[in-house]
Length: 446
Image (spheres, rainbow, N blue to C red):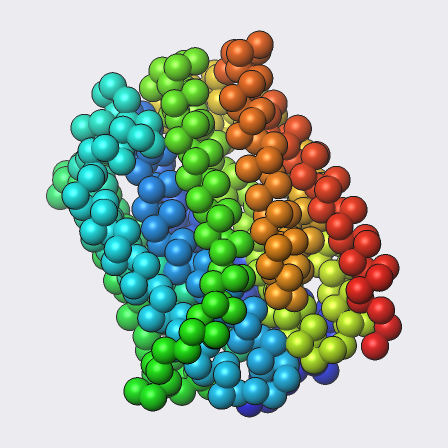
């Protein structure tokens, strides 16, 4: 085991969290800036309808690629605890299984997407005029999705090794290459939304090549042919924890389907475009909170595996504190700058008029989401799959989807926007209760 991974047991929680969270946050920042600029380029250089097409296609491709993230997060929980126990052999075997599982799952999804592309696009809300640009955007990205999945899986393993800086650089490589290629393919070569898709696909390739270099040259997880010996027990252990993220992404995809159809029914292509802007801002503005959450997981998993529960509790409280402070700052920025934010994406006066109010409502409860995110992440890092699953699904699955189905019947499109803060409040309350009980009874002084 490298000195680096042993630091997770010895260094102060504050310094570890900063060391893990800052690179993770920067990496997510570049990833979200990439999505943000992609949307701005598409909205301004192609048209507002193209933003609606992105809102339909991206949940599909992200669902497929997130299978890699799911295997990465679930397997990295196993990997971190194995490193914490000094079991390097199991850590290497886990990584090999993550690669095999990611490739197999993603290739199957891509084949299905290739043969049923139009049906899938219709299912996800490519209604009316949205279908044509959605089809042009879908196919190039679909073919490159396995590379993105391997990048997302490799990224979580890199952080589990306590090498978060390399994970950060991988996301920067993807973001910068996509922005440069966007300008080239959309603006210079005038290839429209197909050019935007090509730029994104090539960015996945460049990210994958960097991740491959890291594991060949820098990683402590040295794979051999024998490492790819299939182990049913290990596969089940990885899948039991990966299922948490599988299920979450499945629910997010169902949410995208319901949202796009509800928004189209209540406000046509314009409403879908407005949510396209809001969804990008959700990913962008919450990057530091997500960075803290990702930085927290290897610290919690390693120390839980080592039986050092005092440090686990300290990590939970410290992560919630930092993420909570950041969430308050985010809300203030959204409240003050909602209209300028909308104006960046489009010149359509009606969309600029309608977006700020919706944006403020969607972010209204963001200061409390730190408890929900860190709480769910703890149970996953500790290998408690059932609780992690329930808490991870609580916002979108148990509250947001039902509220979006019910509230618009009484409040129209306003019901969609207020469903977000209500679901945040309810899911955070439940997670807080679970976490309080866990810290009082399970994480006793070691």
